[in-house]
Length: 278
Image (tube, rainbow, N blue to C red; front, side, top):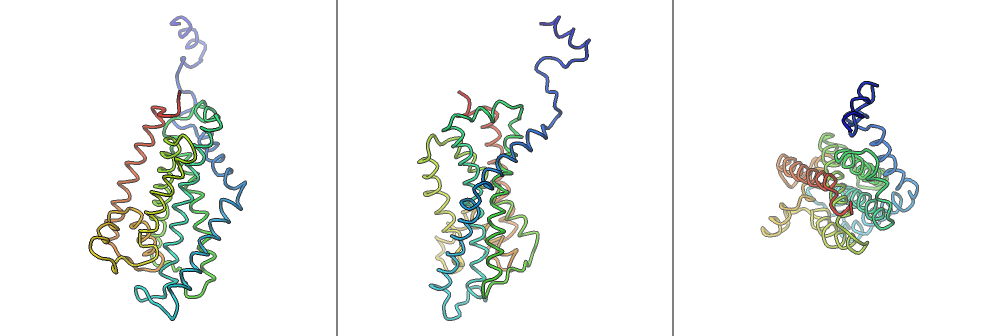
């Protein structure tokens, strides 16, 4: 083997086992990202249009049921207060669904090897999957926001562009990372549905989407402030309408720290092949 290596070096060939595609496999990373985005674009009626319609129905129903007779929340029409929260809720759920379903379907169908065999590092796998989830989350959020702009009593500014960008990206990244972990951990669709029903949905609904936490008791306010979804929704709301129930810097630090921890965990999962390599 040593003689073969010497011959290869003399002939100008790379040594056995060495990486020859550079520090980053840009083509492989783009291919993975392209696959993850084409997955949901091909069935756009289910992955983009349906969540947008559902979110718009939430807006109509809650506005009619709770926003009648000129109800005001935080000195603004209820519809305007509600719109940013619904947009983030839609982004959260769809970013999670994109990555979790992709990995779980690949495992169930037995073609996960097609993702693991190419020369993609753990970092590239993490970036590819997360970028696909972020793209879907932002696409759904944009479609919902566009529809809300044509509704009465809704003015989506934005008041602070940096907050809109940061908290939208943070929300999509966080749920994309959670989706990857769920897809790796789950062995069947019931497992993924359990995470959606008992973790994602409750944290989304109890995060100040439909109300201001200033109206809650101290215990419930403490629960809300421990919920990272609250900071993402509250920060995004501040970016659009200039109103917040929390300290923004606390939200920035808290959500950034959670995303950093999740990214490290996802990297280690891909690095070790946990539940992916037999």
